[in-house]
Image (cartoon, rainbow, N blue to C red; front, side):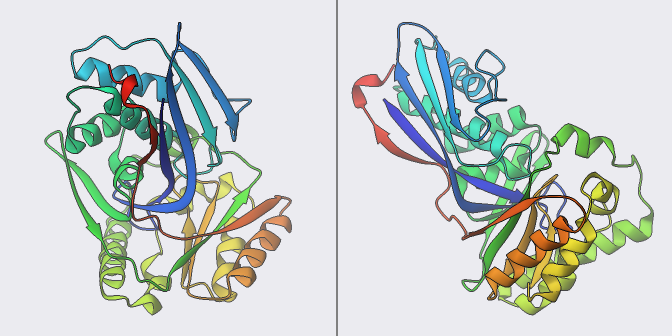
Length: 304
């Protein structure tokens, strides 16, 4: 038996569209156990909606890892214990993919390299921004260059914590991407380049007072705002309550506020603003996960 713990992730952080990702202290666990036949079970978040058949992302990742190693996978039972909400922009799919890959890799007599696991994860996910921090932890800058993932981990000011408002509204990544335009005005692209650069500099130097400006965005948030009633009001409420900066978490529907204090005020303000627009929500206070995916239990006898 092998169990892998994988953190939730939030991406974009406003202007860093498909390039920035941050691992958070909320976790899913993927457990693989020898079995007479392939089985998948899901408990917790997504238990009613996540498929148990060949479409299951963790199962696909396990099979892909064995195939990459040139080995036939044994029959396995997969147990997914999920705490990361589904379709909220908090990396639930990335956690499933990374968990399956790391668990399967643990079973191989000659494990794949971390770089290879990352490349497979990005291919299965479609982009590297979620899977990179899910696998490696921390704040990651990642992009694809000629089929290779180029990435660098940035420091996160120790004073920062994440307040995440989680609406009851689900937004699939596919739906969130479908509302984005094929082209954007040059002024908006320039706007985002400046904000993304400022965000990286603010994180690297600890200049948290600049995050309010640095986390602004014109590439994706304005087009996704209509998918979540009260979106703009909730971000404004977070800033008014003392958040250093606030944005949509990934493709949504969760909202992310980075704070150095007043966590309850910020979380409550976001949920109240969403509630005023007919959207029920809860909030969580999370830290930054610096470890990424971790094997927390293993049985050496289970190796293929």
